[in-house]
Structures are given as C-alpha cells and as structure tokens.
Length: 296
Image 1 (cartoon, one colour):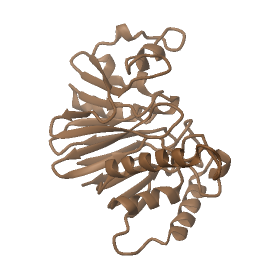
Image 2 (cartoon, one colour; image 1 turned 180 degrees about the vertical axis):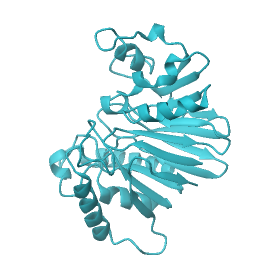
Image 3 (cartoon, one colour; image 1 turned 90 degrees about the vertical axis):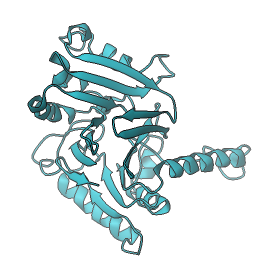
Image 4 (cartoon, one colour; image 1 turned 180 degrees about the horizontal axis):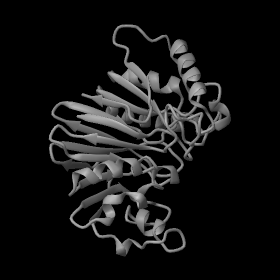
C-alpha cells in the first residue's frame, strides 16, 4: 500500500509563510491498495490538490471515507473536481448522524445548497453513491478491506483501518482519550471507569499491530487540560497507544492551526524526548507534512 498526505492541519486551513514547509491544508489522506484501488480518508481542503492530480488518471473510481462531518474534514468535498466529469465513479462512506437522523448523504446535500455553494449536487456529472456504515462494518474495496471503529469526539467519529494483503494502516480522524466524567469517590465513578477502560480496549484491538498508525496529535501534554472535551489527542497519548498495540510506525498529524512549522517541530521534538523513544519494539514516529509518502 502507498499512503500520501494532502492535508495535515486541524480545525481551519492555515496558509501563509509560517506553514509552507508542512502545509496549511486540512485533513486528507490518499491510500492506494496494492492493486491501485483509490481510498481517500477525509475531504478537508487537501482533497483539492489531490483532485487536480487525479485529472491525469481519468476516468476515476474513488472511495471517500469520512471520519466525521466537522468542517475541516469535509469542506474540500464540493471542490473534488472528478465530481464534475462524466464517467467518474465516487462512493462516499461515513457514519449515521444521530443528531440529524440522516446518513452520510447529508454531507453533500447540505454543503451544496445555493446558500453555500453555486452548484447544486444535482448538477454533478459523475456517478455518486453514498454508503452509511454501521460501527465495525467492513467494506471491501478491491483487494483492500476498510473497517470503521467508533472513537471519541464531540460528534460521531469513525477511525478507519485499511487491511491489504497482510499490511495495515489505521487512521483515527479526530480522537480524544476517553476520560471519566466523575471524580474518584463520586457515585458513578467506578461504573464509568469500567466503560472508559472497555472503550480503550476496543480501540487497542482495532489498531492492534498496525503497520502505520496515523493519529490526531493536536496538543502537547501541557496544553491538553485547557482543551479537555474538545476532542483531540496529545503526542504522549499517541506514543503510548502505539507502543501498547505494537504499531510499527506512528504518524502525528492534525497540527494545531496556530502553530507555525517551526513551533510544530519544536513541540514534537520535546514530546519525543519526553517519551524516551528508542527501546526495542518502539515505533518509528514522524510528524506529518503535505507530500509525505509512505509505502508498506
């Protein structure tokens, strides 16, 4: 499999001279199976430069897996150029929205209303299908299998595992460590703690032994307490998870949008030193940037 990063920022696009090296686009990851099947993880603004490259490969058949429908993970979708060209086939996969009571089809229906976009969904020329997924449902995409796991975010969020010929990659989308909403000694603490531990166990199983773990690492350990409940992880949590489940490589992504490239490099280096990597069995850890390619 080949993995390429097209967008690595979180929350909002962050263009400018201080983000040129790592990139200012929001989340989008291209995965190619061994047989060349095109799987796209999330549709932040990074999907637009990917779309321009795909124009050299017409006709396009693509499977887009949406982790969740917060803007930074979908706001590039109407600009996915293959939608506008006859002969292309795109299937958009994602979770049922318990708030609206709708499936993943709402992601285009809402964005492409005239109030927000000049072209209606009905005017698109490609063949577009939608598949609303159940938790744990496996989707066959040629020689690859994509399985969604429910993670922790203020909206329904699926992490996706892609397996292909004995190799695997897991992408968390946005994820915050599960935490107990009760204080020790309060009624409900023990029961809730059991739920927290079970949720983490389920995630560990889903990620287990992944060749590549792509993880939301928005915050440092020092920053996290002020951001608790916002739905994002820390470098320390990601490293601990990768170690625990035997992931071979950890890619830290979803960079805090107010951080320059130099600041991102600094907090990453500090976190890696704090985690004391280098022991036998430790994962290789990288900080993502647009254009990063990994072959497994």
